[in-house]
Length: 113
Image (cartoon, rainbow, N blue to C red; front, side):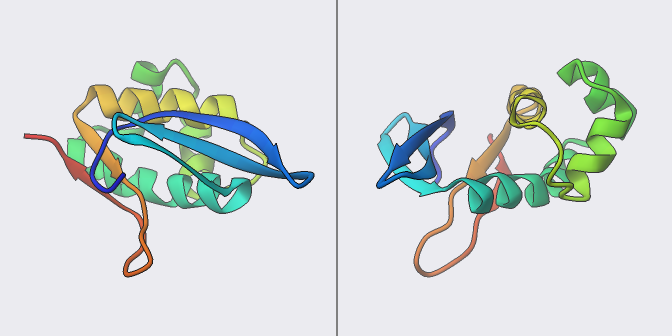
């Protein structure tokens, strides 16, 4: 799944614990929900910076308020998953690729060519 576009994050349950089912063009994997969402939120400022977009521009593109962007970039745990997903989708429309973590390194972001 390294370097492949994240297609979907879906909440599923494994042994009564919520986990995120991460689907890419190459397959899927499971990750703890809070780790996954918080990791994604922590990357979003870097992703926005890579695109050159302001918080206002990204908010408009994503269909959320600028305050939601501020809260996401601060990794505010009270932001809804739906809002995070809208911002993630807007960033991906701007050619951002979210790179999942591996055993050797943490998650990252890049711009597609």
